[in-house]
Length: 395
Length: 98
Image (tube, rainbow over all chains, first blue to last red; front, side, top):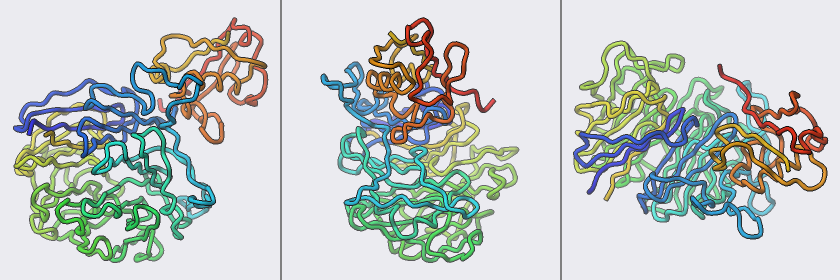
């Protein structure tokens, strides 16, 4: 193992931090895509030098960036650096930022409406890519979770994107509603044991699963209870914030919902609450230890209106029992006057023998623990607000 | 020759410095200029106007000859000074957010 690469998306650019496997000293890149919002960047499990990034702004919309050298250089897919952007006949080589909902009669679903915040119908409008999930086996295949909620897939390294329209076309689509951050598809989990199975989550529609590689989908929200919707146990409408899985046990899922930390032992068919002794069960991020599938991490946040840690103390909570019994991890984390948030995509783990855990804050710090959470230290402390953190364990 | 100025973020995406100079055939309109711009720099597709509806993105403005042309019809002729290259069409990111 040569080291660890941490990919950090922020409100004003992306940063790449690298270290050897000791994870004591870190090199920090200058900002990539300075000035743009980087909702997410992630590396391909099949080729660690292949990275994808979602670059967006309210002014200029969505851009997809790709690196083939571990983040040293980037280009919009279809336009390699230094090469013309068009073919000799003038045709663009790629349309990597074109995300168009599929309404074709053969494969698509009619664009009806979803619900707006006040329950009135609202047309589907593409806004941005929240999450990029590269295939586990093919560097050129990557999934994109977008706002307004839909799932897209590229099979040509991000040059072109096609919607997996069966998800948006699920009969419940007209009842989906945006969460405070927008109606986003923010979680994509590929099942390592079943290439046809994908889990996704939408705020605020809930969790869905396909068992046929994205053709058809079913909601998997049984057991969720949400008091902010008219029917607290409705099939859809739940504000799922994040789902996490350990690759060795793909039927076991852990969820941080708007309120409540949940667990499923049957691939989402049913959920039960594992909030236990957490000081608050509101939060965004959740992740699972790389080698201990019953060890999970959350960062409790005070409430849905007060997006900071309770009592001004930044605490990661760890359960070694798969939930319900939680311990506060505080060593190295600020325990006074800390009022940052940790967003849903801003926690990750590495797979070094002694599992590393990482999370970023809206205050611009990225904290890391090289001992499974026992102790923490900032590996960078003055970035723009952190939106996402991903980790690559390099061969 | 039509002159176009781009916001800094879009110049960086297009790998250009300073003004962009374009040849536009036929009547010089917003649509014709943007078509020519996107043909030369396809990485700008979707950043100025929507890829499907072709509507100007809400926070992008078009100025020329000290006039705001943002709300002019896309097929309306641009001022002669733009058509002759005496003045640039300025594509500007709206000031928003403080």
